Picture 1 (tube, rainbow, N blue to C red):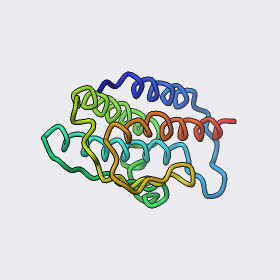
Picture 2: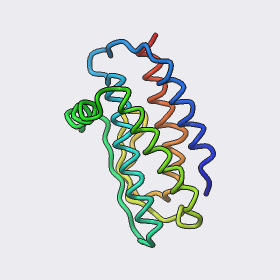
Picture 3: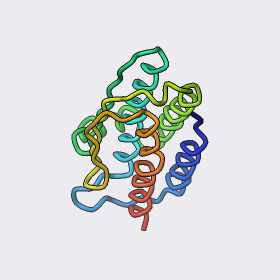
Picture 4: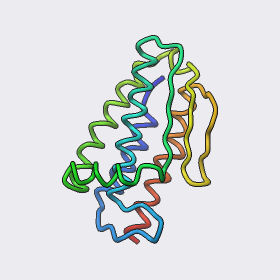
Length: 154
């Protein structure tokens, strides 16, 4: 497995982040800081699952739900000094994830117990080959948050 598509998806997301000028979110939506913090936390979970597979584990677990972690998102944003610090952290977590993905090889087909809820757009509650979860992250998850960031600027 290779990370080319994943790297391009992160590149598009970073272009949106770098454009800046974000306004406040509509009621019930995430702020730009919360979106980036969510992506950092998600990357860390994906790194853990990928590392488990690379270590030879026959089983891994991945769970993230969009709205569950708002207090943790705010705490991470404060810890990193706001959006600029979060962006730097996301560069690191995304690079690390992409580097690990490049090492996966056949381990990418290992089933991973996946629990993912992103609004009504993306709901997964079943074991999936890790390559499929990475594909959902690349084609659905990252573009969704890129679009949210764009809307916060519009």
